[in-house]
Amino acid sequence: RDELRQVLVNKGQRFELIEHDKNLLVRQRQLMAQEWGQRHYMLQQIKFELSSRGVVKEVPKELQEFKILTNFTNPQIVCHLDCLDTAATSLAPNEVRHEALEAGHYHDYRIWIPPEMCRCTLRLQLKASRGDTDLYVGNALQPQPRLPHDEHTWRKAGLGDDKLTINYFHPSFTFGWCYISVHAQRAGLDGECEYSLKAQLQRVRPSSSNS
Image (tube, rainbow, N blue to C red; front, top):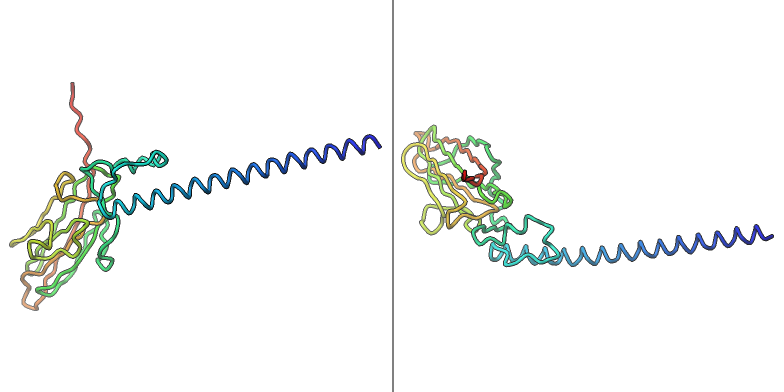
C-alpha cells in the first residue's frame, strides 16, 4: 500500500512538472508571438517610410539584428520597394533581349537593383541591327521613361549603338526597380526596328588605400 501511495505521489509530481513546463512553453510562445507582432508592425512602418521617402530615419533597437536595414539609414542610399509598372518586362542581370519594334513605339523593361549591394553600377547596351533605337531610363520613381526631358532620368540617343553607365553615386540613383525603355526612332524599310538590349549589374567594391 505504501508503495502504491508513493507511485501515485510520483505520478502527481510528474504531472505537475509537465503542466508547469507546458504552461511555461505556452507563455514563451505567447511572448514570442507578441514580440514578432511588434517587429512585424515596425517592419511595416519601415516599408512605408521607404516607399514614401526612400530612406529610413532610424532603425529601431528591436530591428537592429536585421543588418540590411542599416543600409537604408544612409542618406546616400535611396530605395523604393514598390513596383510602379508591373506590365514592364522584367530583365535579369546579363540577360540579352532580342526584339522587333515599330517606329515611334516603346518597349518597357524593369530591372531590380538590390539594396544590399550598396555600391553598384548599372551598364546598359542597346544595339540596333535594323533601324535606329534610343535608350531612356527612369529611376524607381519614374516608370515608363519617355522622350520629354521631364519623363526620364537618363537617356542615350543618337545614331548607332547606345551605351549608358549609371553609377550608385549619381544624385538621382535609387535602389529597387529601375525602368528602361527602348524607343524606335527610325525604322527599316518594313517599318520596324530590330534591336538587342543587355543590362549588366556590377558590385563596386570600396577601394582600399595602402598605407
